[in-house]
Image 1: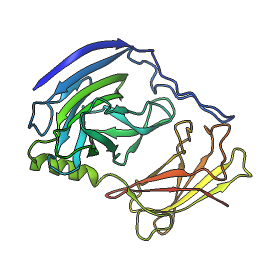
Image 2: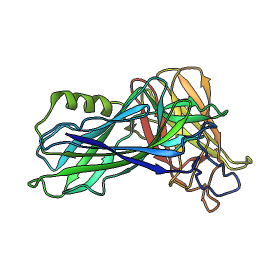
Image 3: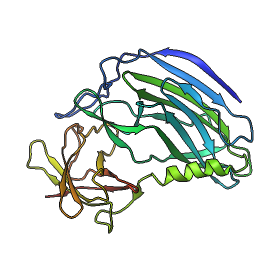
Amino acid sequence: MTCFAPGRAARPPHRRFPLSGSGARRRLWPLAAVALATVAAACVAPAGAAETDAVSLPGVEVRLVSAGGDGRVREAGIEMRLAPQWKTYWRYPGDSGVPPVISFSGSENVAEVRVEWPAPRRFADGGNGFSVGYKSSVVFPLKVTLKDPARPARLDLIMDFAVCEALCMPANARLALELDGAADPAVAQRLAAARAKVPEEAALGAEGAPAILSARLDPASTPPQLVVEARVATPMADLFVEGPDARWALPLPQKTALPGGLARFSLPLEGVPADADLAHARLTFTLSDTPRSVTATAVPQPR
């Protein structure tokens, strides 16, 4: 198995997310001091391996894993093991940080890769805000659809991301793995555990807990307010709201506990593109709870 460090590429001291609209907010790296260079590492596994060796970067080890198989759809995953006190970001990083950018463009005999995102947590970012992501470890399950299941397939990953402790470090990992190896029970178990943490799709108003009950918009407020009510399984439940595309940068909701296992999440609709149609915008709601999380996509109704 071959792993190597291709070197370091210069990066600016912080990264901004261009936003538009009267309520747009600038998102910067969360802490005052940020590393000026991207650290990078790569690893290529030999044919038949169920996982690559880990590429070791400051604060994190990253590997690519596969559950093997011979069907058109294969199960794989990106595994990140973080050092104590280090964190990395979800696809929507919150008040600060950067989301991972994942590419499989160099793969062979791969038609599509679907990345699944385990439910994240909210963390104080050290700058009076909160970031959204993971600590300790996380596995992103992958559903890989092959072009031709009768031919060999190779998954080639390029991942740009960030890890943070006292400093934030931009990082790059390159990993490659054949998808035709024998099934590995240990890898399959890790992937199954990760899939269990991915929020389940559920309609608004579903039975049981956790459940997202309603999403209502108050357009008369300045700025307009979004209010989401949910039934939660634990007091630690949290809600994250995403817009229809990457131009949206909604703030994190404020939570109010209600009697009977209910919770209300409220947020001003700031960080919205100037041309957004709030009355028809489909938002994605992720209710992160334990041991199960749910997600729903819906157009908020007027209050």
